[in-house]
Length: 474
Image 1 (tube, rainbow, N blue to C red):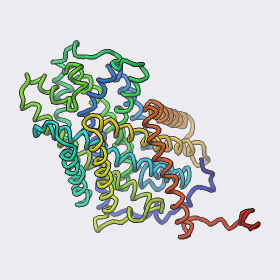
Image 2 (cartoon, rainbow, N blue to C red; image 1 turned 90 degrees about the horizontal axis):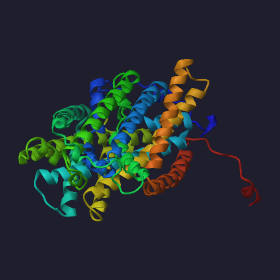
Image 3 (spheres, rainbow, N blue to C red; image 1 turned 180 degrees about the vertical axis):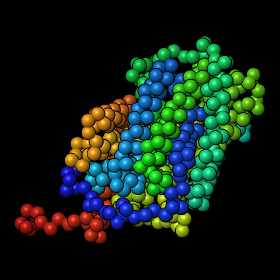
Image 4 (cartoon, rainbow, N blue to C red; image 1 turned 90 degrees about the vertical axis):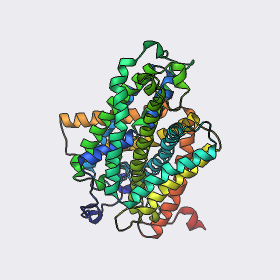
């Protein structure tokens, strides 16, 4: 943890600078829609197959992760009210309370998680595009071409402007809820107990089952923080960010549990674990095997994925823009157009997952691609979650806090549980995922050395004018 002297100096001119009303285009409804649209992407349309591979114990894990995600939503709402300049959300919290290096590391990890998560979303989206158009065993090059469409259409929408982005987001949220609500309500009338697998279907330890379920469950809840990340775009963020985060997360959580359990009961276990598009057989089971039912849900899943990618492209751009504004990312990420859109950051949010998908499609396919990208995203996002909890802890233990009594106890409990949740998720993700994430984190540390040197040269951080002992000797 950085000392008080390591904290960046307060910048009242930037923190208090009035934001153009046009930039704050998201009210509580649109912000809630952004949260739901970011949380519920095409991942939910693939999630039941992965959960089924762990067994019905995965539903318990999903419920636990839902509670943890809701606690994080409360945490982000509290921090948005307490940190003077919240541009970038999680990154801003860590930078303000823990210092520049913690802020950089948080922004770096979250940025990686965001664009890698876009790749995971589009990998699931491609499976439903294949199902919609009847593409059987397409080559990796064909799937990569489809993935490019899914990544670049949202990028173009974001470049047009945030108002258009919000309109598209609200529309796709409505469309994606239709098949999910159908399965969550009507599907339960067709559930067969024999379709559910065993409590632990891995053939290994229960710990292995929990690890499989925890990874995909947390990935499915990544997005609880998007209202905080895009606080600069939200009207009255001190009030609306917390409300939108909690409402969006709670609605997503209830739907996730109901839908995942229903799909497990609609589709035979052996069929479900082998399917990359589990909602297709689920809809066919409800509607008597009608082929058009599978096409309909595939089309709605495709629309859902575009909506999620639309919101996540904005989130990826905003977190890198905020870090660039503070000199902790390359300045190009702060370049904006006349609509105040960080156009370079938006392009980067499309280029990087495009390159990642090219690499993955030349190495593997189907659910293997999805699972790999999920694990990468989960560990890299758990680190910013932990830093956010530590930022709140720093505030609550400092003389600056404005809460006492039972409110202090409540906030400390939220903070402690959020920190434990982030640590548990990292532990449950498995050694391979933690190893890969650690390589990326350490790469960021090397990058920070160049950033710190550049900032010192530009006069953005104090220089150390004390000669070292060996320099004096030389």
